[in-house]
Image (cartoon, rainbow, N blue to C red; front, side, top):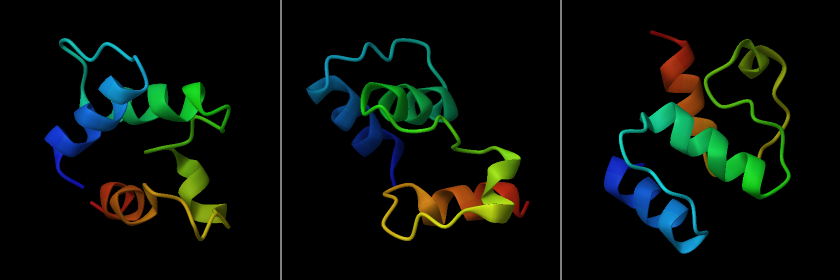
Length: 64
């Protein structure tokens, strides 16, 4: 997902994104949704969240 799209989602949720990295913004969105703040963590190795909006980005991030 593009950075600007993620910032747009955060803005709609009332999350300020000034000077935040993509990872921090996604985790802030996860926190706001009362989900586990797991984006970009080692949890990807055991992730079963098939419907997660961030899943493909997360797998890509962790396989670098």
